[in-house]
Image (cartoon, rainbow, N blue to C red):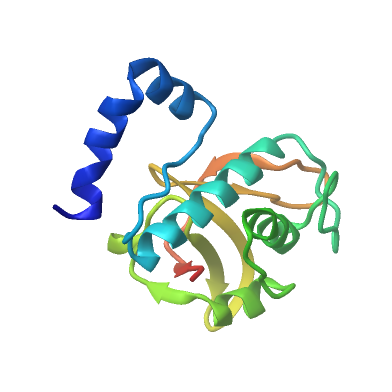
Length: 157
């Protein structure tokens, strides 16, 4: 029996109420033998939750939180809270991620907006073609539909 197959039996033994409580608080179950991908997914989902929790925080160029953010400051802060260190700028963050295709993107991956080879913006993929990001001066951290095809995706590992 693989580690993933054991999860349902662990949940059954924990009981429905415990499983619902765990889901409600956004917890996770540590299962020995899970791959590094599962660990990365947990970090990505935590970073996504942190970014979402900053909804409405004002944009401020160069800010890295906890109350104000620019785009890469939000991703840096979110992944730091999830246990991963990222470089400061969107371009540096792109260079530190595992590059993936749009077809392989998952919630918690980084979305890099580019013009030619110049990365100018970053957000955290939330699924369904949307990102959490700090858009621009005068705006706030928010969930928004990806508005262009000029994006690259990166996975923090």
